Image (cartoon, rainbow, N blue to C red; front, side, top):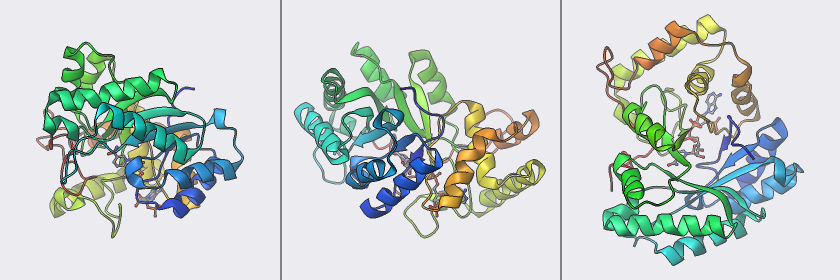
Length: 301
Ligand code: NAP
């Protein structure tokens, strides 16, 4: 099954919330569900899939390995990666995984071989049919190069924080050369209301930049007769990135899904959004990662 353009994220949802959220999302028409071992909600996601009554073959399921290697945890070995993939599938109870990702490159902090060993474990899970496709998340150019130089099969996807304030231009250009596709997470992070009262690194934006971003989004949303979240999701889709908006609210869930039917933002509005980050010529504004409270997970290994 091909990866759907608009998926449903489940971060910061406990097992009960994700069971209801996934059931509602599938009923609303979502066909890609993104979870992770680290979200501790895989069983809820699996229960939500069953409760929706939607055929397993119509749903694309992504989950992620928690690799260890940071915060006092030992990096998982090859065998432990295989066991973790099997355990995730057992929790989800959905027959097979469509996509299995290494959540972060933290194992590389214990040495290149430790990082490559985890990737070998993922490839073994693919060979055994536990996962149909395998990939990574939060890997930078050095991590991907290590895999390439080891002449191993390259990851099909790298799931990354991507939005106008975090455009990852250099990394995306490198990935294109190596045939690694991007999946965008935290597309709504530039919103002032994003993850209100929850764990994030949104303070890193600073007051002045938050105001500039807010007024640009407001202007474009007004012109388009759309909402500011829809403008951000539309920007990602027009760049060609699959997205994973998460919402516990059914109305917002449906609004996010309808972004595919919205009119095009147009060249001028795309340029205004591009100028909110990227560090490119004419912007002078560096990318800022907001999703992880402690900073950029790629830089930590
Ligand atoms: P997101 O989906 O960009 O934004 C979620 C936040 O926006 C929530 O606070 C949600 O609140 C709110 N929201 C959603 N739709 C809205 C709308 N139409 N209007 C106003 N507010 C809206 O952020 P995310 O959860 O960080 O990222 C999406 C998914 O990507 C995650 O759930 C997870 O599956 C994945 N992810 C992966 C990584 C990784 O390291 N690989 C990191 C972060 C995220 P309500 O629930 O109240 O609507």
